Figure 1 (cartoon, rainbow, N blue to C red):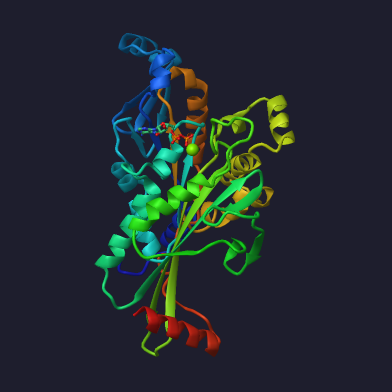
Figure 2: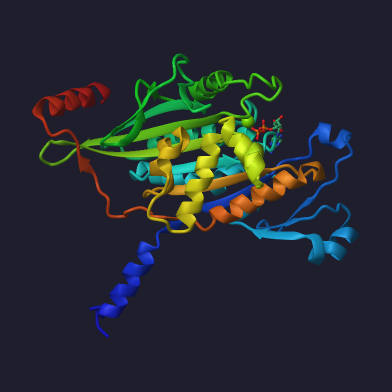
Amino acid sequence: GGVTKTAQELETISESSSVGSRILVFVRLRPMAKKEKEAGSRCCVRIVNRKDIYLTEFASENDYLRLKRLRGRHFTFDASFPDSTGQQEVYSTTTSELVEGVLQGRNGSVFCYGATGAGKTYTMLGTMENPGVMVLAIKDLFAKIRQRSCDGNHVVHLSYLEVYNEMVRDLLSPGRPLVLREDKQGIVASGLTQYRAYSTDEVMALLQQGNQNRTTEPTRVNETSSRSHAILQVVAEYRVRDTAMNVVSRVGKLSLIDLAGSERALATDQRTLRSIEGANINRSLLALSSCINALVEGKKHIPYRNSKLTQLLKDSLGGSCNTVMIANISPSNLSFGETQNTLHWADRAKEIRTKGCDPNEELVQVPTTNTDQAKLLLELQKEN
Ligand code: ADP
Ligand code: MG
């Protein structure tokens, strides 16, 4: 007994911590759209206990009960949101903990995955009346900062970018594609706007404007941005002077990702897959799937380099990051195939283990040179 642990106990502890944390996976069902109703859709999704999803092509209760064993597909997620779930509940359940983590200096990321029209942009961006995860996260971040003591200084920067056709663009300052380069912090898009945010009020308009800048697919004009990935990065830096009057800082980054429509990346037969690759369609989404497969299988080599999206998200998938996946689905039986594919993909994502966060990570001392130090101090004085 006593306080000292046996070697075996220690081994068990280190083993379990090396397993890392699992990606949390949520599913959100959106309400039936008017168009779907007019097309005579039936509902093919049933959520039970806010966790279990039954997928059945059959609409009536009797059909469901009779055929659930034969034709039903059952999935379980960390939470499954019925179509009545509001934006605030989706935010609180999926993302608010990550926002808390960001203030502690931990990175986090939230992905929305699903077919075009399944509700990804509604979940991430939302509308003026019903703002989504991106806006609610920033609002919450500012609220949490206000609650904290004023012994230090919090600085929040936003970047909003798009990956379209293997080009990275700045959604806050549209122009030429950005070049990715690797530096000490990882892979960064050079020249990307870092918007210094002071309050929530300006953010919704800013993000909606940014969303307007997303690439509209030229061949299908009414399917705006179905092939573009939008990434909002919220970087919160906390600066404080230590007892020796050095400036120390802690940085946490939250990445919120509205992925391109998954429908064309879901081809399972080789011929379709080849045509997808040939046309360079959704290369980033395919690469994301490959990375997820490699992570699930515990491979040493994860092919992050295969696309711009996976390069940008390298530190958000396999690294020490808290990761959340929200799979968006339509209730209509007309989307049965896509919904089933999305749920299978989400089911697979549950198996990913990330390194998890180092709870002992503390404030790090920033710049080492005197001039940098002086500059930072000046900045701090200005801000205070
Ligand atoms: P995606 O970004 O996946 O292509 P959208 O988010 O644009 O899909 O959603 C398609 C349509 O459905 C939009 O008109 C959107 O406002 C609506 N919608 C999606 N999810 C919901 C929801 N949970 N509640 C109400 N309307 C929704
Ligand atoms: Mg969208």
